[in-house]
Image (cartoon, rainbow, N blue to C red; front, side, top):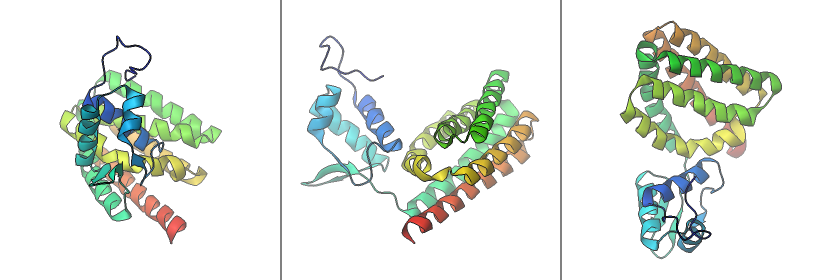
Length: 225
């Protein structure tokens, strides 16, 4: 939890990084939508932050491609077009493919058990038709593979890459058919990861993410085509 200074003056004010995390999370979950203005005064009041730290946070997010800052208009949530999403997915194919291979080679028993546990919860989501919960657990499933790979550089890159697409995933990606297809991919990958098949796991992850982009492209066509 980030500190809220309005109720307790003894708490320290948030840093620019903490404010950026707060805004980023709201973009990820759709509470801040593309095109929405990010009013500095509102953030200052909500976070108990200084103006300089809020501006630092917004500039950080602009560098990540999440926020657009215009002269005389201030900051707003940047809209992400399909072309940019395609570039994000191309990067994910490579980076998460590497992580899957490294997880198969190097993951600890603890990470393997955590991944099995999340997969069991995903299976229940399919049977219970719980797409929102599946979406949240899917993020955790991918995060565990990245974490278990031991590659901190890729983990940081993916953290920034994934934010612009999470809102689409939460809103429209997981209808019942897509949910079952995505989970079948997870089950196959889990077997490869647990068997230590690095090449097979990398290839399966690459296919899984490529298929995910094809699905998003179809959704885009359904909405705007």
